[in-house]
Image (cartoon, rainbow, N blue to C red; front, side, top):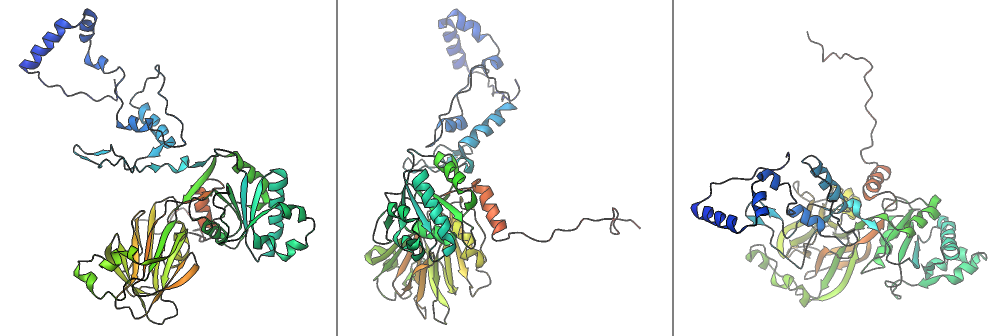
Length: 475
């Protein structure tokens, strides 16, 4: 039978021959008859599943059970890879797994507390355990062109869908809305909240954004833990993160409520600013071969002044000072480099197309688990942007010899000064932003690159009118 590897045959030893003859004598007659058949025939019976089939049987959360093929199905060497490809697309791609072996003797150390799967992007689909009831509508403030879409959407969600709609108090208190008497009945049914005063994290099932990318960033900042699915309509300036068109909002919202929509899990950064630590640590970090100073490693000894979830980037810059910024960058407690320039950007893959792209970094798809470090105007010809694995802990502090302080901002907000002894600790958050896709997570991203950033847009090369070319002719 083709596609089946030949088994290695070794000459039996004397002890093995004695054991075989003893077993032959004790074996029933039918078993002895089967023993006489060819070994190739015996290998055709159902084999023990290999590691790949074992992996297929392990069901991921939210995915259907794996079913055995019918007994009458016969897999040949040609059809088996196709079947494996088909099953793999429905489960997950190759990735670190406790039972994965590399060569005859190497394997990944089993870790029952942490199993990482690299999920097939096509399998990231939204589903509802229960029908959504509470919807948060975020609109861009100080934009009168969004008043009519806002009123239409609220009227549709309340009157036609019978949903509870949450909005910001300042969005309802708009003077133009207060003058609209026809909208008065809808306005009285809206549930209002104030940022920083009211906690709505456990009340919202779905977020709908009307505006640009800044509106989605603001919606993310309202949820410092688990984030509901976000549906963003393009009614702003750039619209890189807002794939939906408002002209067909009824159809698109109905599709999302039915479930089974493609979704992009946009990772966020968990940022902690620690202040009140010892001033100027001197050159002690150099004495420990690049290890962070004790005062920096014991960051919990200071006072945590701020802890945030950031969707785009953390920017450390020189502020109003005319001197170069001079900050030290640590990775998992070890000094990696000192940044001398205008500053440094630590961004998510989602933020790689924002300030980081303007500073010369590569653009990373939001599904890639990574953290990007990009210098801003570094005073070095060899300082290139780098990508580090998601999950590592970055720490940024002022260098001991820095002439001035630094300033830090988080998605363009909450800007504050960083002095000697302060530290900024950054790692990947376990609370991503589930962004609903209009088509799918690959098509939407490349369409945004082409439409918003005009990626690789140029005049096409004209076709040659003459078949022959002077360079092709032989003398």
